[in-house]
Image 1 (spheres, helix red, strand yellow):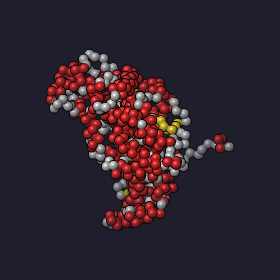
Image 2 (cartoon, one colour; image 1 turned 60 degrees about the horizontal axis):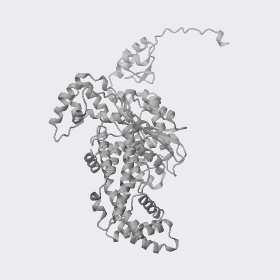
Image 3 (cartoon, one colour; image 1 turned 60 degrees about the vertical axis):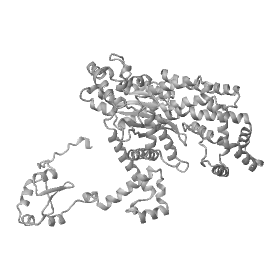
Image 4 (cartoon, helix red, strand yellow; image 1 turned 30 degrees about the vertical axis):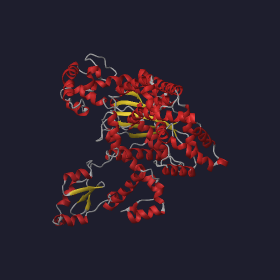
Amino acid sequence: MERFLRPVPSKSKLPNITAADRAKQYKELHEDGGKLFCTSCNKVIDHRRNSTIRDHLCSALHQRRKSETPAQVALKRQTTITTSLSRRTVAAEEREKVCLEWIKACTATNTPLSRSDSPLMRSFLLNRVVNGGAIPGFKQLQERYLPEVYSIEKEVIKNMIKDMPVSVMFDETPDAEGRCVLNIMVSPLVKDESGKIRSYLIDTVFLDKCNHSTVASATVNALNDFGVKPDDVISIDTDNAAYMLKAYKTALKALFPNSIHVTCLAHIMNLVGESFRKPFAEVNTFMRYFSQVFYMAGARKRRYLSFLKTSGTTAKMAPNPCGTRWNSWYMAAAYHAEHYALYKSFFTEELEICRPSAPNSLEQLYAITQDESLSMTLQLHLNIISEKSQVLLQLCNLFESNLPVTMKVFDIWEDLQITFAANKELKLESCDHFFGPNLPYAKKKETLAIFEQAYQLAEEKLSKYMDGAQPAMQFLKECRVFNPRCIVLFSEDEDLSSIPGFEDIPKEEIHLYFTKFGPAAVMASLSGVIDMDLFWHSMQEPLPQLSRLAMRYKDCVTNSADVERSNSIYKMVLSSRRRSLTEANIKALVFLYVNLKAQCAQESVSENDGDDDDDDEML
């Protein structure tokens, strides 16, 4: 019936004006909650009628109230219920602040929020922490304050990477619930005071299926959510899985035209290291039995550490070779090379203690150490591995670090190829300090043959990636042009199209760089060392386009080690005692743990000074 009735037009001719508009028109009035108040009289006035307002301002009561002091007026000033409820006192703001800070402290240290309900923790907060009694229970912390802290830190990361060139890295890992989890990180290409480039987690995505399509889609959505512009993505770092390569080729390459796809350098060095250790069957067997003999054997560990202490060596357990801990095999080899002479005595004593129920691993180790020929071979191999593997150890540590090495990678790998080629043909004379005078000649030749095979396998693996399996190899070769010391390796008219945007650089700028500014920087440098950041910042005026391109690409991230670490952090958060966490809470907890940890590391840049010195020496 209503659709056949016409609405009756309003007969009111009052102007369409708001209380806020009237407050701007009359300085003696103010607006609150859509109502117009007389500030002096503290009463509501009809803001629709101008005549009503003028009559009130001319009244004797208003003139008398107008003569009161501002302090008296403020004490009697009315507010609406909405305004009163929205106002917060200083005490309320402090209580809110301590709750947010408590969430940050717990998530940054991976402390479960449920610990807030512990009687001892609650007593500590009440008696020892200012405003600690304002911290609510676990449920309220998780439902109200955790999402708020997550939103605040998310905005911090957004502002940090806004309009900045970034490197993107992502990796998938299965979790304890059988889900496929994709962690996505970005690295704004700006060094901190220690010269490192920090990475920040932007999203943890739970995938129904793990393939190139879902990975690409999740990455694009995360970057859009954080406002990363397509032209600002400089490099995309992944492992060498086939679906990761396909994700870049089929989708990400077109969406991010300025990007370079880099297979993680640390991952490649780990594969090279795995190839190197394949021929050492006896060493691998010994390490496996050694790890097994101390597994779930606390009493045996205590006896072993006591034995080391009485022998005058540092009481420390051997590193456990593990596929997920790169370099652990080489660190274990160095440990066993140092302690091998003690093992015969220890395993003999241990077998006597455990004789009725000695495990198979202990019996095997006893047999190995009693066999003089096998023991001599093991000791020899361990000694040589310990010395020869230092280059692989240092390079893997370098590529796992946050130090930018983009302009040095190609030269480092060429030097490593030369090292492998030289060691493939080891001479007896170069290894005399390992062999000793009593080692048979046949054993010497056999040992050299094993090491030649190890170096051959390592060289083949490295050459595979240098010859094309590393998709960014040509870029890594050409980006050396941004180092003035390397311009002698290039010509002005050389095709450097692997660097996105290089073909758009004016020829005049390239000519000036090759003939004037580059050589001048080399001549002015001390011992040939050039501060690349300082040099290219100084070139912004004479070489504006070339300097802009150099500053975007010279320090792009070339490893995805940080996202591998975020996978480990995810598994720490989702422990066996926290399986009831929802996906939203897992995402927030991992996000805060990773990023707060990165921010703390950036604030205390002197924490790993020793490691930085070693990395700089390698560079």
